[in-house]
Length: 268
Image 1 (spheres, rainbow, N blue to C red):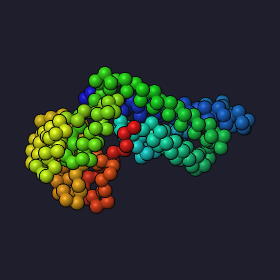
Image 2: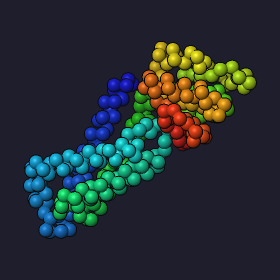
Image 3: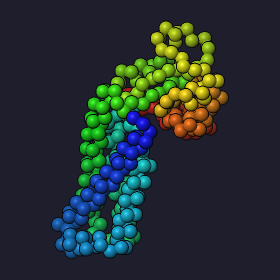
Image 4: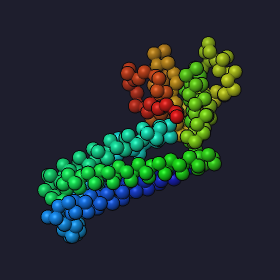
C-alpha cells in the first residue's frame, strides 16, 4: 500500500473518530436532558444553529483530535497489543472529556453536567475501542493475504537483532517484511551468516540503498555506546528521507541526541 493511500486511510480514521465524538456528544446531551429537566434536548438542538455555539463545538472537536494525537492514537499499532491500545484510548477519552467539561465551565454551557460527562465518556471510549477492535481484525485478514505490508530494514546483526526479526516473522499478522540487514564486518558476522538472513548494505552504502529501494521503517539494533556515530548517521538519513525510525525496546536511549525514534513494544 502506497504512502498516499495510507495517509488517506489515516485521515478517514481521524474523521471517523470525530464523528464518534459528535455522536457521543449527542448521547451525552440526551442523558443530561433526561436527568435535568431544566436542560432540555430541544434547547440543545436550538443552540447548534447559533454561530457562536458552532464555533465552540468546532473548538471542542479540534481539542478532541489533538488529545487523541498526543496520546498516540494515530501512531502505528502494528507491534502493540490490543490491551495497550485500549488503555491509551481510555486515557485519551478521559483527558478529552475533562477538556470538554472545562470548556463547558468557561463558556457557561448548562448542558455540560456531570451526567453529560459520564454518558459522553462511556459512549466515546466504548465506541472508539469497538471500532479499533474491528479494524484490527480487518487489517489482520488483509495482511495475511499479502496486502497492507511494510518493508523493514534492521541495522545491526547481533543476537538482539536476530531475536527481534524472529519475533517479527512469527507474527505474520503484523504485516512486516524484513528485507535485509545493514552492518559492517565484525567478530560475530560468521554467526549471523548461519542464520540465513542477508546483509543488503554496509553503513557507507545505506544512503543509496534507501534511495533505490522502498523502505518504510528502519530498526536500530546497535550497541549505542560503541556505535553511537553510526546510529546518529542512520537516524539522520531516516529523518532526511521521511522513514520511520525505531529502537529495539531493550536499548538504552538516555544519551541519545539525534531525532527521537519510536521504541518497539513487545510482540504478542
